[in-house]
Length: 246
Image (cartoon, rainbow, N blue to C red; front, side):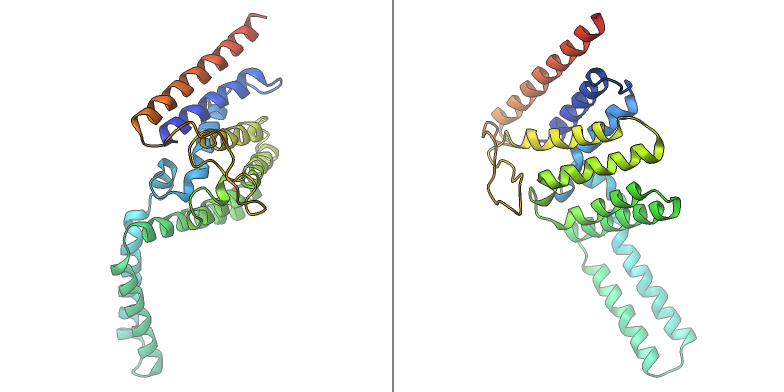
C-alpha cells in the first residue's frame, strides 16, 4: 500500500483512539503520532516517506566520509613523522575517501538513517529517556532489514507500542502507547489487504497472511486504497459523532 494511504489510515486511527477510547484526551499531537507510527514499518523500504524524511543527512553522508579522509590525510602529513603510523593514517584516509566516493543510493540512505538513529540513541542516553534510545535503535536497524520482514511483524508492533508506553511514563502524556500502537498496527492490517500480505509471526512462521484485495501500484489498487480510506474515515467519524451526541 502507498505511503499516502498508510498515513491517512494512521491519522484516522489516531482520531478513533482520541475520540472513542475512554480517558484518552482528543489530542492533535496524538493523532499526528498515530500517523507517524503508521509510516514507521516502511523504514525498511528505500522509497518510503518516513525513510526519506528521517534520512535527512543522506546527501551529506558521502561528503562526510570524504571530509574525514581529508582530515586524516592532513593530520598524517603535518603531524606524523615518516614511518608506519604515517603510512597507516594515509591508508585509513584513502579507505574513507574511496568509500565516500563509491557511495550511492541505497548504501547512503542506510548510513544516513543509521546516523539519525544513533544520534537519537545518544539523545536518549543524555536525557535519561529510555524510550528515545529505543526509538533510535529501531530507526538504526530497520533500514538493514528486507522489506516486509521484521518491521512488519507482531513483535515489532509490540516493541513500538512498548516504546510508546515508556514515553507515556516519562512524559506523563496518557494515551501515547495507544496512539503509537494503533498507528503501527493499522499499517500491518492495511498491508494485509495487498497481494503480498504480511508475515505477522516471522521468524516463527514464514507464511504471509491477509486478504489479497489490492495490487499495489496499479490503477485499480490505488482506487481501492482511496475507497478504503474514505470508508474507514466515514465509519470512524460516524462513531465519534454518535458518541458526542450522547
